[in-house]
Image 1: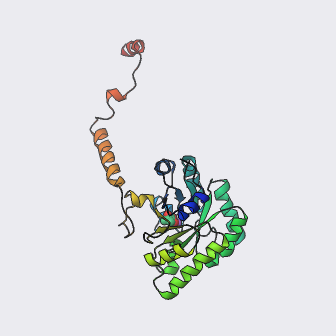
Image 2 (image 1 turned 30 degrees about the vertical axis):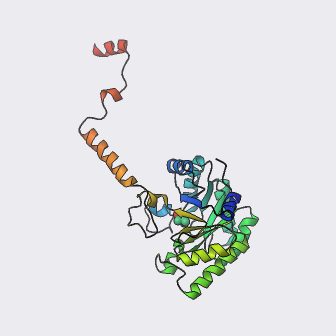
Image 3 (image 1 turned 90 degrees about the vertical axis):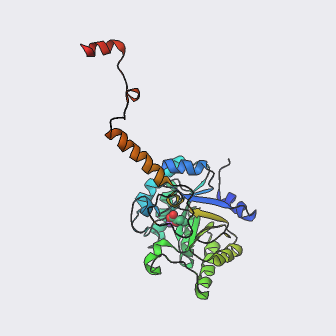
Length: 277
Ligand code: KIV
Ligand code: NA
């Protein structure tokens, strides 16, 4: 199948074909995700939680994100590869943000970076695009703003908040963002943004009217050790599969039924005689 580019995603919006997106954090899972035909693979900073076990996305560093982005890069052939800019890597100065973003392209092999936030990021989006770094915006429930939001809460539920989200979406588009992730907002608000902006929207907890959908890989396959949010649909139970395999391994090694003779290497016949003497 042909390589997915930003132009492919734009065409999909125009032709009303859903964009399929998913996160991945390592070589093995990224291979499976890419081979399944997912259009956009995000190395999300959600890896802080689902891979590293932190309570929020805030602690993950640029170097850690790059380490995973490189692993995913080696696996992905078809999908568009996007890397999340972690907390603190783009909120201080535009200069620093551009320097960090170019690392994701140069060292990580990302084809775009994702940053959270609205109109206040417009200048940064322009500077990134100037530096040849395509940008995915992220509006609504933005997990790096957990302290300001006072928890992981659905955003855009008042007239004022809806007005801000629409303004933010238009500001990001005008600044040159290529795609918008819409997270944790009423279906009606995501539908309105999707209808008003010319660039593709990708929803998570934002209802079925976006141009595409994204989930966290570990949520999809039940590996996130958390009660799934309302917007998660589990398509498999990897935890159960792994538990069963692990219980079998522990049982067989403990009971000396693994490894068997057939799983062992043997000496050639003449050496076997020497060993026997
Ligand atoms: O980090 C992440 O996984 C994300 C997606 C859920 C959009 O930002
Ligand atoms: Na993220």
